[in-house]
Every structure is written in C-alpha cells, then in structure tokens.
Length: 489
Image (cartoon, rainbow, N blue to C red; front, top):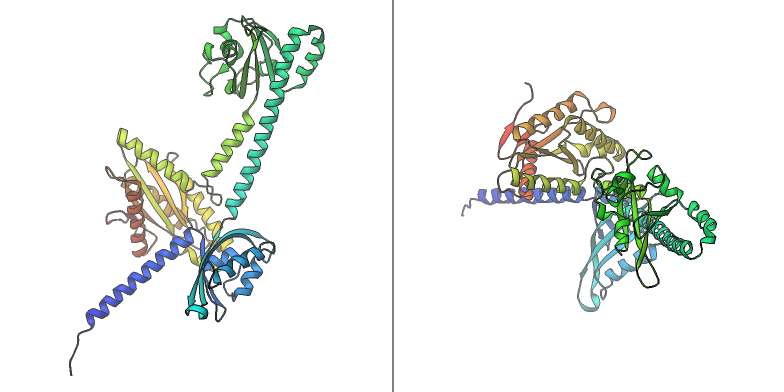
C-alpha cells in the first residue's frame, strides 16, 4: 500500500475553481454592462438556456420556459423568414455554421425592439452523418441606437432640404433682382414686392460700397434702415460681430467687402447684435460680386438669414450624444473626453486629478425583487444625489449598469474621499430604494500619478472599488491598498 499526499492537488484545484468562477463573474458583469444577453440551445432536446439579460431584451419573464418555438414567436412577423433562413443556414452541415442577423422582436405587450443576434452551430459526426447538436449565441439590444440614427437621419434630411431649398431660392432671387434693377428700373415696384415677401435679408451695393437697396428683412435684422457709412464703420453701425458674439467683424472680412473684392462665399457666420437683438442673433451670410458686361465689378449682393435654430438643433444633438438618457449624467464618451482634457492640462500646468468609481451595492436584488423600472428609479435617484454633492467643476458619469464614475479636477485622493463620503452618508440618511429600502454604495478612489495613462488610472480606481466590495461594501477605498475609514463608529 502507498500513501499519496493530495492536499496540494486539492489546493490547486480550489484555486483553479476560484479563478474560473472569478473569470465567469467578470465575464457576466461585462456582458450585463454592455447590455448583451447570451443563450445556448440543445438542438436534440430543444432545451434552451437564456441569461437574465437575454430574457430582459426579449421581454420574457425569468420563470418562462424558453424553446425554439418561443424564440421564433418573439421575432417580428416581418423578420421571421429572414431570421429563420439565417439560423437554418448555420445549422446546415454544408452551411455557414455561424449567423449574424439584425432584426426586430415583438414583446407580448406590443413593444418593438431592434436587436443584433449572433450564433454558432456545433456539429457531431462526420460525412453524411454530420449533424448539429448545439448552438450558442448572443443578443444585443440596439433599439436606442436605431431610434437615434433614425431621428438624426430625419433631422439632418429636414435641415439639409430646408437649407438647400432656401439657399437655392434666395440666391436665384437675389441675382435676378440685382440684374432687373440695373436693366429694367421700370419694374422696381414688382421687385420690391418680391423682396418684401422673403424673410431673408438682402442687401445690394454699388462698386463704392454704398448700399443702393435693402429689403425689410435686412432692416429688421439691423434694427434700423441704411446708414451712410465708411467701410471701416460697417461693423459698428450695423452690429456685426464674429461668431464669439464679442469681437467686432474686421472691416476687410465683412461679407459685403469680400463680395466687392470679387469673392463668392456661402455660409459665413455673422452675429448681429443691436437694439432689435440685444443678445445677438446668429446669421448665415452669402455674398456675390455683381459684374458688368466686361467682367468689371459694379457692386455686390449679400444675403443673410437667421441660423439660430439650426445651431441650436446641432447643439442639442451634440449634447444628446454625450448624455446618458436614463440618469441625465454624462456618458462614457464625455467621461473619456473630460479625462483626456484634464490629463493634458496637468501635463502642461501640473496639479491634481482624482477619479472615483462607484457601484451600487446589491443592485441586482432590486431588479430581481422590484423589477427594472424600480431599478431605473434607483439609478435616477442616485444620479440626483451625485449632482447635489459634487462640485460644479466635477463630472459625474454613468459608466455602465449600476456603475458610475466621478472626475474631480484639482483634487487629490484625500479631497476625493471627502466628496464621496458626503455621497455615501447622504445615501444612508435618505433611502432611495423601493419602499424606502436602504441602498448603499461602494467607492474606489485613485489619484493620477506622474506619467500615468487613462487606462491605468481607471484600472486602479476599479481595483479599489472591488476591494471596497470585498471588505463588506458601503465604504470608500483608496487605490494602492489605503483604506479610507471615515464613517463614525
């Protein structure tokens, strides 16, 4: 008989099991944060295993048995044939083995969602006996992306059509009016009626820069009629400013002056600020020279129209692209932009920069017990607490799921801890969970080190966050192993 010491084997096995579970947990967290669901289909038994995220995307309850028939019924009727063809092609032994298909799903309450589904078929046997036995795949909810793309396309198309139609019409009328006034002065009254009918300012000058004609829309923009002025006084007399709204337009750069030099230009942004528009109005100006029979410049024509709505719409689109729609906080895109700018500032001027990673404790239990709507309300309430407790110079962003990030410019780790302690204590003082259930949060703090990259900074803050979770949650941990215990005993 021989005796073998297997304790080390057991220890290694346990370590390996922990590593596998840890990897699986991290993978699950990553999939949830990315809003990606997973599924697996045993083709022989028609049994399917769906992740919680996949069920949420398809609007299926957790206790619902999922099979191939339920999956097909969830696909929008107009897309079923295309989805079925893609899946069958992957399951065919001589087919593609994989499929990727974008399609709609139809919830039982009538809600329509857009998803991207990807799958991989696994086969057994060889030759003529080769057959599919299992399929695995993922599903990604792209509804918001499709909606945003559609709205942006509609808005862009509408704006482009309006601008193009107005520009074409106005340019044609302006040049036609200038020629008719010079060649057929007897039709001045007809031309004046046409000029009075458009809401775009139109100005015509002779070769000396004297304004010989303007329409009521131009006078409305100016807040007065024509003022005899030298070129160097145009900006002051007519309230012409550069796009910053503060700097007067240089005399040689005024669109009318450039038109008199023979330039043709479009889309020059000019801010008009006067008694009619004390706050200023953004206009888009165009200019063309008026040439005589031999090509000599006899004057110039300028048109300008209110461009404020277009600028405002583009600003709103830009703001939407960097805002988390659920919480109203910044999203990952703005977080990365701000971090990049702050790190560049520190490289030039030195100073401090800290970042905090925050994760709501046991948030999954809120979704499981009260539903995702209640979970969304908790996230929104937490966002309000963040906005109230941080400085105006700080930035709070939703990092993904129930995880958030706070950028604190000109703040070292100690200052960051003080800030997030206010947040943590506020959560304890004013419960934000469903039915006034207490919700706590764990925080990881990292201060930027000389020469450190953004990825390293985020990674250290994330590691500190996981230390706070492992140490019992509802606390703040500073990166590099320093625990911040500021709660009262």
